Length: 201
Image (cartoon, rainbow, N blue to C red; front, side, top):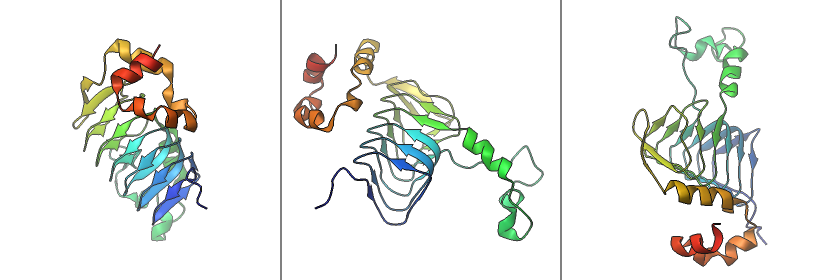
């Protein structure tokens, strides 16, 4: 019998130094390098995610990239990666310090975040709980909880809820509820007003 809580991993998915929570689903053609992904989060396919901590219930659409590689536009005469991936061209050893910099620019994504199709989350960015990232957005700065951002470079275009409701949701921390509790309260999740009245102090 299949354990539904086990991560579901599609075809052509590469995982290096990655830890997945329960009910995680990774669709086809993805690379995750040194990533921690919380329970119930998923990718829709063709994703590249490097050096990131991803919360629970995060929805990552197709072709979204998190912490992509950068070329040394200002730091070196040549931008091409032969200067740091030298071994691939028979030109000596790789420049590990170049990769260490990217590793240090860790990306942190909160709980219940939605990252739209083809969006890019740049190195070092933190995205708060409940935020929504528009399709094809390039996020270069931190995103506050429950904020909607879009564009290149991404800018806030709205807020999902009032400050008062956001504060109540944050206090509830529903994303840490047990699986059975989520199941029992599923109907309430489908009605915002009922949910708020019953579970948001």
